[in-house]
Each structure stands twice: as structure tokens, then as C-alpha cells.
Amino acid sequence: MKIYDFDRVIDRKNTSSYKWDNPLYQGKPMLPMPVADMEFAVADEILEALDNITQHGVLGYSIVPDSLKLLAQKKIQEDYQWETELEWQVWLPGIVPGITLACDLFANETRGVATTIPVYHPFHLIPTWLGRPLITFPMVEKEGRWTYDFIAFEEALKKQPAVFLFCNPHNPGGTVFNQDEIDLIISLCKQYDCMIISDEIHADLRIHPQSKHICIGQFIEEIPSISFFATSKAFNTAGLGGCVAIIPHKSTREAFVKKTFGYMPMLSRHSIDVMSATYQHGSNWLSQLIPYLKQNHDFLMDFVKQQAGLDMIPLEATYLAWISYDQSWGDLPERLLEHGLHVLRGEQFKGKNFIRLNFACPHSQLEEACQIIASLSH
Image (cartoon, rainbow, N blue to C red; front, side):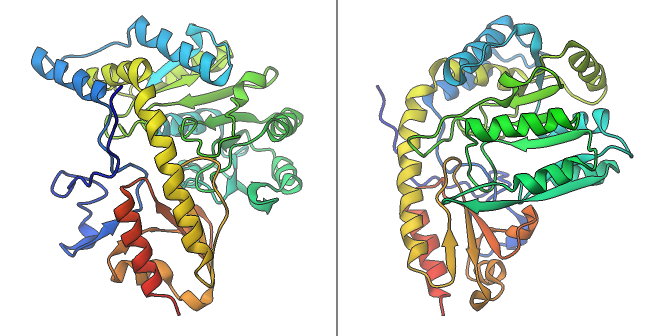
């Protein structure tokens, strides 16, 4: 079994990296921790799959083979205990395009889209771009974790949205929703006839030892649902894309598939073969990644506790720290940028006085980030 070195620093500058080659930096030295990809080399088997394509030399159109469909079905059944049918699968180049298509298709100018705040920013941007009413409700801190304000959730559903966008595990809060929460979400959406669209891309990035990912689609029967899964986030292949939507209701699935024509490109052979390699051989790499992320998480938690005016609720999943700051820090994101550390503003996720920091990096880079933050403390 190969041992992977997550401490190795890999120079990603001048690689067309969205993260490292951002024109915002204007050539200035910068430690970027905004975008949700990792600083780690991928598993060897993924590189071998890409090498095989290069050696073959032909880059024509591709179809999703039955072998990949079976691997995805097996993954969902074995890891999440959801028995799905192959015919429920719809393969797409990415989850955000899939969510956009679904909101365009199933919401309208009268019945819009509901989601929580804070949340992954496309969840509130997509409905706005499409001209669909956006209905939001807040998350709250309860017993040391982020969860829904379910009274506010029901008030939002009373406004009759057609679609509820669910992010599980939650980005940026890091919550892995438990069975009671899942059941209540379904019950309320059923009561108000609201379709559930679930983004589960962070499902394999659970860093809390007791957390268990529960697929909401497994328990939905009376209302339509779409559940999106991808290997790209957990295995650091976001640049290749590729995902699968699980759509149990036939009429919903047929309408969705019809809508993809002219909107969605075919998957590339690169994404197909990499997903296949990940499903088959990725477990060793992932099993070493998770404890490394947990160590980084715990280090960051300890650091934040020592900084007056900063706070961070422990994450159950993801590598995206959601850190609050008080007014004594001023405009913290801007100050950090001026001192060579780029993080995302909480306002991007509809969360005021927060930053989101990506700690999926070698520990030395996380230490450097903490040193920059500490240098700005009052």
C-alpha cells in the first residue's frame, strides 16, 4: 500500500490555476486559500488513467460505459446504504450546471427557489440569474454545530417555492445532517409540495469520526428529487468535472434529460476514466487524506481559539473553515489580502463578518496562513 506525502508543497503557479494564477494578485506573492480544490497530488491510479489516454492518442467523443454506471451504483449502495437503479442515473459535466438546469426547468416566475443562508454561493446566484424568486432562511448554531432554523424553514416553504436546494454536507458550515434533520426536511417539503435538489459533493470528506452521510433521496417517495454526486471534490479532480444525478421519478428524469440537449456537453474520456479509477482504486488515498485534513482542522481550531474576536464551530465535513470575526478585526478579508493571504468573504455566501478558509493544504502552508492572521491581531 502506497503512503502518500501530503506535506509536499507543489508549485502550482503558471499552470492556469484558478486558485494560484488569479489576475487579482497582479504578480504579488500570495497564499491563496479561497477556491475549494486541494494542494495535494492525486492518487497514482488517477494519473495512470490519464497516462493511458495520452498514450492511446485519440480524443474523440465518449459515452458513459455501463462499467462506470455500475461502479457509481455500488459506491452509493456500499458507502451510503442507498439502493438505486441504473436507470435513475443521469451523467453530467458538473453539478452547478445540473442545478442551474433543474432550477430553470422546475421553478418559474411564480414558484421560485428556497435555500438556506449562508450557503454555497451558486445556490442563491442561480435563481437570481434565471429570474426565479429566491426565498432564504437562516442557519443557526445549536449545540456546537450549524443546523436549520426549522421554524424559519417552514415560513420559507409557506411562500410556495417549487424547489428547495439542499447542500449536504453543508458548504460552508460543515454540517453533516442527521436522520432527524433529514426526516424533518422531507416532511416539510412534502407538506408544501416542494421538490428537493440535493448537492452531496462533499459526502466523502467527513472528518468527524461519528458523522455518517445520509442520502436524502433515499427517503423521498411522494415528491420529486434530484441528488447529485461526484468524485471530484474528495479526490481533487475538480478541473476534469463529471458527476451523476440520481433521479428516481421517471417523469422528472425524462424532463430533465430532455432539457440537457443543447445545454450539456458530453463527458470527456478523461473525466469518465478518472471517475472509474477513483471508484475502483481511490480508497487508499482517501483513507490517508481524511486524518491529514482532521489534523489541519484541529490545528486551525486551536489557533482560532487563541485569537480574541475570532470564532469557529468545529466542522463535521469539508475542508472549508467558516470563521467569524468581530469589528475589532476591521475588514479582515481585505487586510489579509493586503498581507498576502486570500480567503473568501462571508458575504459571498450571505454570511456577514465571516471568512471561508481552505485548509486542504500542506501543514506548512496552513501554519503560514495562521501567522499572517496572527500578525493582524489587535
